Length: 421
Image (cartoon, rainbow, N blue to C red; front, side, top):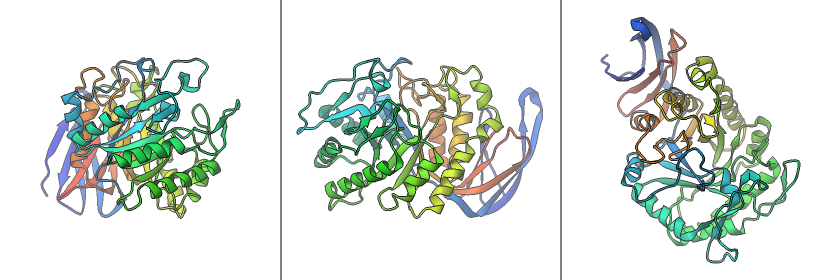
């Protein structure tokens, strides 16, 4: 049984032509010492199945005043940016983020004045509502078509609601502006892979929270809009929600009651804590710390399995360390230990797509914020996209805990991924 190695620092991939195998590993460790172990891959049955376009990245609505961690505007004329997206053929891009629930869509039938976001200490999220002009949406779609990107668009889910001082939002979703925007997009023949309702409004919420029962009703409203507007058009776009942090009770209540209206359950991950944490690198290289997020993947998988829903699980946003990560950490090589482990671990729990925060913006972007040249994690994402097949295989490793092993079927072989922390 032959094998070949691809090595980048402490990461390496091994490809075998076999159904099941046991392979001994002998790797050079720090200080020249030898690290040994045995990896076992069971290729008989898949334990999970990812999307072909598993790799996804986010683009946030970040006005210059919010972008206090470096430039995060989208220069759509950049050839480097265009080629970075085209390299994936396709790359899923999720548009939204914190300010998506304050966006007005300046469709032809909208009567409100189109004004940009303005910084305000009295407003939720620190900004007044802002507007997406349709000429900007047209420009974005021209870029998406040239790059071959698959777009997931995050809709404003707070319109029409009353936000109370205790942090709750009540009342039904006023979907008129969102429906108008969707109709505009269909009329212009823009392809949107999925429409996502809201950002971080579930469970305890960020800024405010909406109860699961109300979200169920609002999701049904979005489904009706999609069916009406896309009548006679197939395939119809996906309906995604809630795009927030995992709360077991909230997610179970929600998924149990959206069995016919929801295609994808999205959740967000920032399991490394704040970017200002001085111990960020230690967390990234600590196997027990990395293992802590496994319960989230496992619990969500179990909720979906026990429900009548056919919805799949996605990580809709994950930047590792919140508040834009940390310069020279989340935009450097060491962050790939966290990122690649996240991709592999989530896939092992049947996550279908993983959206990295961000493509551009902050310290955790896949691309440099000013030059658009790739940061190390861009290459990690591209390597995953090209090597790892859809079927996830049960994999175990006997040896040092700092070596982790994951395996997927590839077209004609098995791709074995083993990071050494």
